[in-house]
Image (tube, rainbow, N blue to C red; front, side, top):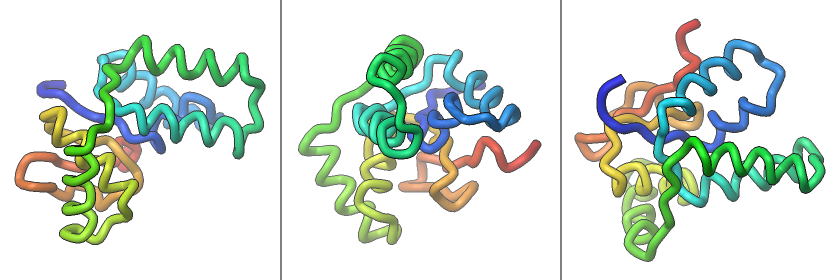
Length: 135
């Protein structure tokens, strides 16, 4: 895969799910050193606690994997300001727009996510792709 890409938290959570196809596809993406933001890690932690009711040690293992294989970026004031703009422009939630803003800030070509319109182009530079759309 050429260019850099960003993974949304809803994709990474499949590392913990039983869906074999989605888990394997996610592992392929993770092993290529994608970019993510600290927001993605925080959202994964929240799902681990609330949905999966995982033990702290297992959550830490999941976070360690994300931090080891992904390039993790911080969310800044600039990221937040751009997210607010994107939220109103594209009619996505603020938190989804924060993912868009982080991906743009990291100069990613692709955002892999299930939460957005597949194949949509954001700001003429970021293509959204649902990695599970084609089996």
